[in-house]
Length: 516
Ligand SMILES: Nc1ncnc2c1ncn2[C@@H]1O[C@H](COP(=O)(O)OP(=O)(O)OP(=O)(O)O)[C@@H](O)[C@H]1O
Ligand SMILES: [Mg+2]
Image (cartoon, protein in one colour):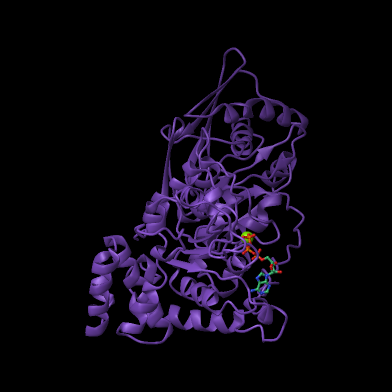
């Protein structure tokens, strides 16, 4: 007796349809599973056997062969328990033949026959819809997540008994499912909380408007972390496709909040500086998404940058350049999206007070060693470097207004994002930071004075080719914020002020400046 039902396996950040085939033949009672299954999937046989018995549908006698096709895709996790049980039930006649035709079914089984929640439901339901399925049977706990996808019927299953009853034509008690409440729009932090530091806020504004990477360097307590944490408050909203894209990643990582199954806010990830390379970039025997992927389309905030494990830091080179990360492991190679805004913070020296001779006692050697922990290759990939001064007492004590608020900054960001949207219509570019070399030539016209200034800077500051392009991209964003189509001298000069070459250094006579 043979029967096949459709399920899905997770592959990178998508799901691929998988046929779960069951064959019951006469012979010794053996349960055999084939089709590139991991040991975790193999454990299904014990769960299925016990769950079927406890659901009142004893395991058929004879040889049971389960095949998960196609055989060249690795199947992992517990999501195949329910389809395997369903295929066996259909084989032995407990479910009518063809009951699951045109449907997808996924879910984990508990020993008493209950169906448990799984990760990666969202990409699976999308795969089912794209395959033309009319229904998707999911664990009841995953129903909210499945309902995010349009044009497919979602049926929540609490137990194997319920599935059998459904097959016998009984209706499930329709559970009233309130629509998920939208994520709150407002943030409990605001740029208005930051006193003074107008230059730093300006750098954050430029970074958010063009999705440029930003490094803040300054003494302790000057507001670096405060600034970085407020960047999400001024970022443009996600499009529906971007929301789905991020939600798929969080669904696979098991981090999708059940009350908000669709991520509508840009992610903000701030891993601790002791993070391992695998946790930052993804990894494990079977690759899993890391922080760079969880920050996709949002902000990755790396505080205390020089304290990070150098191996982890250097691994950022590829995602910062390619906006995706490739992980190769024994268990396979995965490519995950990783297009994020890097916001980093650091102290300029071990004590943090470089430039304040009354407080800083770090030696030149210590300062150099500290700053050298961030390689030039990483600095080269950071578009904006902002030196954050210590806060002035008068500003802090409330003598002055808080200054520009997140609402006002967001308004400026949205206006410049609109300009970028119109400019890059029909191409895959969304933000200025994504411009390629040919894109720079096409979309970044310069006035003659601006061109002369850039040429002089290239010669005298010894810019690298990458920095040269980054200066133009940042000046494109500055010009967009001002509503100018042609980049002028002022835009170039502001962009030049925000380069890595401007990091404070130990004052040593005859010492050459770092270029970048
Ligand atoms: N510009 C500012 N306006 C108002 N409060 C500020 C400002 N700068 C710092 N503070 C206060 O100082 C606290 C510490 O700021 P923050 O954590 O951002 O400093 P930091 O620059 O990240 O320091 P560290 O180098 O030690 O990490 C804030 O929680 C806030 O109370
Ligand atoms: Mg800090």
